Image (cartoon, rainbow, N blue to C red; front, side):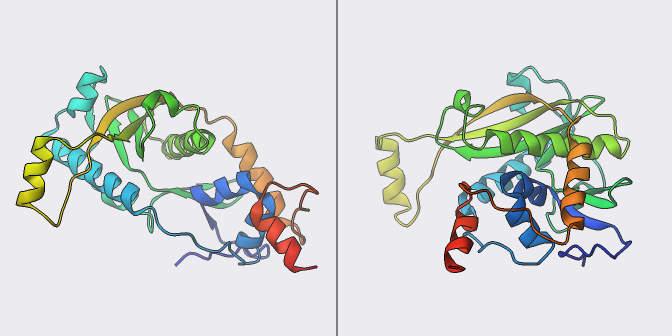
Amino acid sequence: MKKEVFDPRSSDPFRLSRSKIELYYECPTCFYQSVRLGRSRPSTPGLTLNNAVDELMKCRFDHYRRLQQPDPLMVAAGISGVPYAHPDLEAWQDFRKGFCFTDPRTNFEVMGAFDDLWNDGAISVVDTKAGDDAKEQLAGSYYWDCYRRQMDIYTWLLYRQGFPVNFMSYFIWAQAVCKKRTADDEERLRAEPTSFALTFRLSVVPYRTSIGWIEEKLLEIKECLMSDSAPRVKRKSSCKYCRFRKRIKR
């Protein structure tokens, strides 16, 4: 298993996940505490419903991958190609294994786990997101910067490993449909009184990736980790974890 705590004296590649890079963006101090000192933030409950939607979409794309036919979502969005078939795809989708590239300047083994890939002669990254907002609100959402950086990094990983890359990526937006119960719902409830169905409206949201920022950011992260002290917490930090640590030290 790869080390989770960075040792500045080691010459071995250090695995840096996409989520750890995002943590650095969110708060360099918490990132240092976690990756250099091994003092991670308290864990939060898993996003069980979102994970279930991800798994259902993977099963759906696997069906069309076996047929080597475009998913109807692709056809409706005017996207050519088919779900990408590769013998290692299952490992690339596993967050414990993932898809990796070792950056030569930092010796970071950068890792991400794809939801899916589409192929039209070049490979596009596909990622499923779920929520109750309309798709038009995705780009303006609280999480948008995180989402786009995720796509940038995944595209960069493919690019740096020499794959033919389509810099247009795609979010599959699964919008939960809230509606009044109908006669069909009542009949289904009588037939299956211990279960119910939640409906999602699926749509494709394109995003053109930008990878030019990534390698300079990795150098910045390496400089942070090589330091013998954590980045100073700003006086009015927006990080609730840093504010909590400061309070308990009083």
